[in-house]
Structures are given as C-alpha cells and as structure tokens.
Length: 181
Image (cartoon, rainbow, N blue to C red; front, side, top):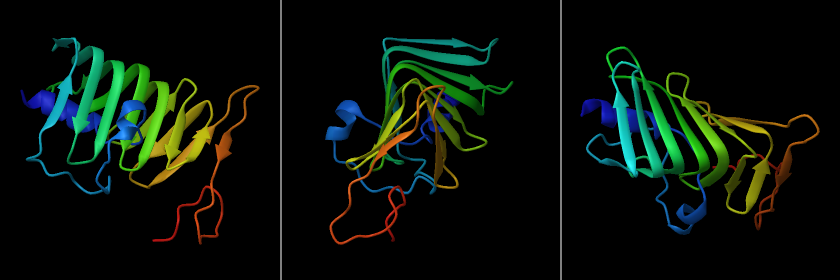
C-alpha cells in the first residue's frame, strides 16, 4: 500500500488545473512547502492495474486525484506511475487524455502531462493552456519548473506562443511577471 501513496504523492507535486475544478475555491498553498503527510491523498478511477514486473501502476477511466495538503487536483482519462526497482519511489508519472490540473490559483489543460519528481518538473503537451485568474498562456509545450517557481512556453512549427494578461487594478508592472509580494 505504501507504493500507492508514493505514486500519488509524486504526481501531485505538479502544478496548474481547470474545468470543473476551477469552480471550487482552493486554499492558498505554497507548492514548494512539504505537505502534511497525515493528510490523505485520494485517487478514484474506473480501473487500477499494477505490474511489479514493469514497475508500473495504471489508473484508467475518469481518473480523479486530489492532494488536499498541497491544494492539487488532476483529472484525466488515464494516469500512469513509473517506479524504481523497489516500487517505492516514483520516477515519473504521465497523465493522458483530456488532462485538467489545478494547483493553488493556477489551472491548466492539455492532452498530456508528464511529471518528473526528482527534477520537480512538469510538462503539459497537446495544445496546453495555463490560467491564473483571467490571464492565460498557450503554446505547443508548457514546462513548469516547480522548485524554481518558473515556467517556459514553447511554440511549434507554424504556431507561436500566445499570452493574454489583464492589468490588475492599481498595479503596474510587466505583463507575465508575478505581482510583487
């Protein structure tokens, strides 16, 4: 059972979110802070298949994962967790099909999301978009460097990066830059 918690904990270090999740009011959470390990992480899906030989756990069909301690949720058609040889540490996770993630005040969508816990890096692919409030950024690939609180948006051949930022009342500053804290 320990591997299930580790799988979910690893994936849920990702960032962003969307769809029905955006309607919920989420607490302000700093993703760089460790979560309270006593808080449960829940995953529901139509099926779960685990292969120790392949070091793989696959949740499929209407997958919903919630990590309340980190303020993170993910919805997808399928989520795969790849483990180390002992099936204790998550090496990477992949969500595929109608991916919607939420993390704090951020929301994101795409057809695929990949998470690499050792690097604390998440990648959204497949016409990804990320929102914070009304601001939105889209491209071909969005890379979130969680530990550094930094992101990169890449365009594709023939497609450019697009961003729409709305000025905040009483705030100046550079579009795309985080407001001063």
